[in-house]
Image (cartoon, rainbow, N blue to C red):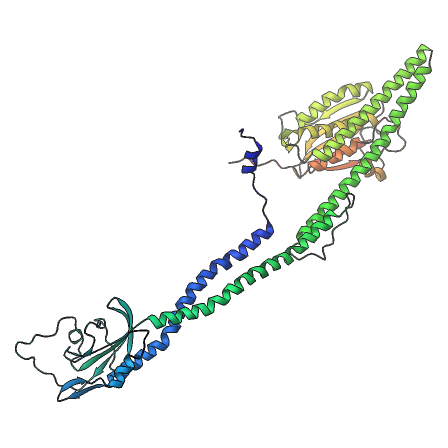
Length: 510
């Protein structure tokens, strides 16, 4: 199987993200993760709650046994009555153990193997304390207390050994205290804690699916405006560029609708310009095409060789005008649609002006026009800018062609490149000795197909429109004023200045 097979493409193709599914995941995942954490915390809390009543019962039993400790003849005695014994054995679920240790560590009653309190335990007399411990391999809860009794210390009889180290009598100063302990296994506590957890978690098994359902319904309702917006957009006709109603959408969707409306307005303006451009272009092309057809019909009817040559000459002129119009239309379309996408680079404006000047010399010689250049030579001064060389050449070429076309024979056209000494920006000037442009028409001449009245110059009316579009692509400004050349004082002439005010050179990377 080839690397470009459909299966391989589908494997590496990223799936489309679902906004609904992503929000649902982010809402349900924490909910499902918190549920076991809640279960564990509930179990811990339930164990604490379930142990409190049983701890109080243990404390009561310790206090009851403590009351059975007495002193007779300077001897500590523990008399466990039958009712007290029945009280300790009244529970069938858990086992209850007790232990009473005398002042000298002697065993007075209860279990012999019940563990003693910790060695560092220094509980106050009569205070009941609780601890966890193990007896016969079972976990138990132990309540214990120290009881102070009035017993005089006795000497150890000869041959009797002292209590073992680690016993209560040795680790504490308890020569007049009696230890009473009661221990109970933890079955009732575990059972009660389990019941509490069941009572808490069983309702959650019902509420959790209900919560998931409510979250799903809330998301469906929350995303519904997006679905409605999608339906409204799909229901639109292809030529409907009116803005979308943003009053019926949520606040979070309003910026998206605003962006779509802005795009629609720009598309509407672009389509309007294209329609007007196509209509004007079709109108402008009708004239040379109609002339070609008429001259062709006349040429077919002519029998005189001289008249036939004239007709063929007219056909050639009409074809030249039609070709020029088409080329100008293509140049304008290229400037409008591709100016921002074409790569820009470091270019020398003087070098571009020199190349265009060389191409325009034959045209100027045909009309006997003095075509001159005034400015620095290539490399003499810093005249570089950041732009597209193809479009900049088209700009200079159209300015020169326009000046040469509207300048009468024997006139003068001058191209200047200079740097403004105040602002430091590059300026391109084209001056001619033609009839000039009235001040009221200087804004109109940049419109496509507009031609000044009273001129008999062949042209398409697109030259200055192309110049303005290219200038906009390069953040430049265009001004038109009278030239008033000293060599031709009788004609106002025209001076067109292009100032590249927004074209800063990119900083070189470190």
